[in-house]
Amino acid sequence: MLDKIKQARKLEKSGRYRDAIKCYDEAARVDPTDAFVHVCKAVAYEKLDEMDKTIACFDEAIRIDPDFTLAHVCKGETYRKYGKNEEALACLDKIVGLEPDAETAWGFYKRGYVLYHLGRGEEAMANLDMVLDLDPNYKNAYFSKGVMFSDMYKMTKKPDMLREAIHCYDEAIRIDPNYDDALYNKGLLLERERMPEEAMVCFDEAIRIDPSKDAIHGEKGNILLDIGKYKQAIACFDEAIRLNQDNSSAMYNKSKAYYLLDMPEDAQYWLKKAYKLDPHLPDCECLLGMLKERIYFNRGLHDACKMDHDDACKMDHDDEHAK
Image 1 (cartoon, one colour):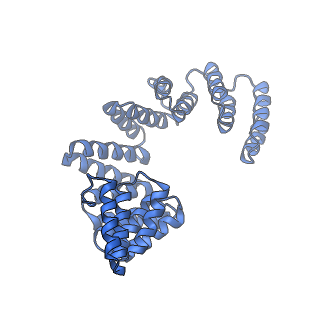
Image 2 (cartoon, rainbow, N blue to C red):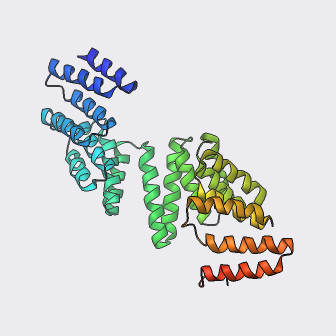
Image 3 (tube, rainbow, N blue to C red):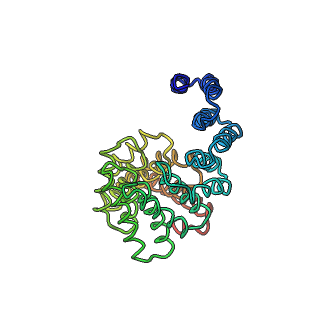
C-alpha cells in the first residue's frame, strides 16, 4: 500500500492528478481501514477544483476514523477556501474535545481564522490563545493576533490595541526572523502612525528577505514620498511596477512624485497609465486636468491653460483641487 501512495504522490508532483487518484483507489482497496489514503485522495481532487468529490473523500476518512483531526481540519479548510465559512466552522468544531495531536494546533488556528471572518472576534482570539498554549512557537497565531489587534486599533484608536498588535508581530518575528509578512504588516502599522523611520526598517528587512513582493517596494516608496525624497521614491515605485505591471497604486504615487519634482509631463504619463488600469483611483480625472494646465502653463499657453482649468472644474464641481 505504501508503494501505491508513494507512486500517487510522484504523479501529483508532475500534475497527473487523475492518475494519482487511481493509485489512491488501489491503495484503499488494499487496506479499507486506512483513513489517511482518503485524505490524500481528497487533496488530489482539490487540485482539480472538484469540491464535492474532495468533501466526499474527507467524509469517507471521517467515517473510517471519526476522531481523525486531520480530516476534520482539511474538510473545514476546503469549505473555507470556497467561501463557506459556516460549513467550515461546523467541521472545525468537531476537533474541540478530541485528544490533542500533531494537527490540533493547526485546527484551532484555522478555527480562529474562520471565527474572525464570521465577526466573532473574541472567540477567534481565544482560539489563537489555545493554539499558543499547545505550541508557544506557532508564529502564524501571533501574526493573526497582530492582524486582529491592528483591526481593533483602527476601529477604536486605543493605544493598548496598537501596543498589542506590535507585540504580536514582534513575537512572530522573534520566532522566525525571516517572517517577511510580519515585518511588512508591522511596517504598515508604524507607517500609519507617522513613524517613518521605524517603518522603513521593517520594509527594508522584508525586502532583504524577499525582494519579489511589489507591495513592499510600493510602501517604502510612499514613505520616501512623504518625507520629500522624491527621486528615491520613484526608484521604489519603478521596482514595484517592474515586479507587477498592473500595480496602479505605484503608478499613481509615481505620478505624484514627478508632480512634486515639477515634471508634469512625466506625472501625466504615469497618471494616465494608472487611470487606465484603475478608473476608480481618487481624483484622477481632475488631477489629469491640473497636469494639462501645468504643462500648458510651463509652455506659455495661457489661453489653453484657462480652458483646461475650466474643464477640470466641470469634471467634478465638488473637488477642491479643481476649484
